[in-house]
Image (cartoon, rainbow, N blue to C red):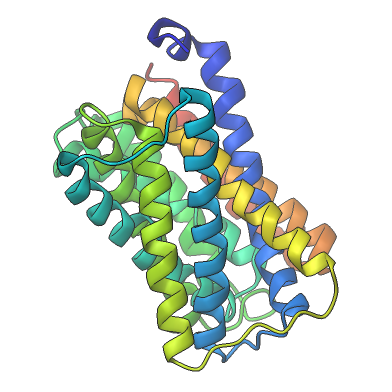
Amino acid sequence: MKKNILTRTPVVLVLALLCCSLWGSAFPCVKIGYRLFCVGSEDTASQLLFAGCRFFLAGFLVILIGSISARRLLLPGKSALMPIAVLALFQTIIQYFFFYVGLAHASGVKSSIITAASTFFTLVFAAVFFRYETLTLKKLLGCLIGFAGVVLITTAGTSLTGSMTLRGEGFVLISSASYAVSSCMVKGYSKKESPLLLCGYQFMLGGFILAAAGVLMGGRLTVTTPLSFLLLFYMACISAVAYTLWSILLKHNPVSRISVFSFCNPVIGVILSALLLGEQNQAFSIYGLLALILVSLGIIVVYIEK
């Protein structure tokens, strides 16, 4: 794709919404995967092994598709080694360690909405630490409105959420912050390196480390049905397709223009969690709906500044 095509609003809209739809489906898929592979909520080792297998496979798929497309094996040069290692740390190891462990101790609905905080973290980090953009009053207002939705869903009455725990909702929030840092890094690194190469190898490296840690801690995956492998393959495709497209969009567009589309993640995650995990009471309660409204409104405020 040419750069001018990747900056056109209709193209950005379609590709960004595709990414968000895939990511939104990950919330219920992780919980379903825990059941299919017999991974308990307290079994951190097996959770890491599950995550590691998913992301190593995702990285392999990205490099395979990229190599076939380029008609040559994609291999990183010396200049790409450090970016791959840094991205593997923030985009895969830290993010998904906290995400997988946190999701095992929080509902899919709550996790979907809390993850929306990554949008606001990204905007703030891009402006304050990476100096890619200016954090204007409207962007700040949007961040505050949206984050109010995150606070609401995590601290609302016990009939919806119960008490907030560090190992549950807290870990999901840390995961979101790590993702925000990695998004800003992708913007910088992709100026000199191929987003496809960075994405593929950072997934393989990060996935290998997560899986190795899980094995060393005594983790194991028990296959109960052939559907287990199908789900694992689908989850690998989620990462391979979504992160590759997202990285390419970040390379050719301002960070704020792409990150604001992440409001679709909690919306899709809430709907799918409600349908697939039986969390209708949380998804369609007054607190859940208000939180979704605030999150969506906050990002709309940011976006209309364009």
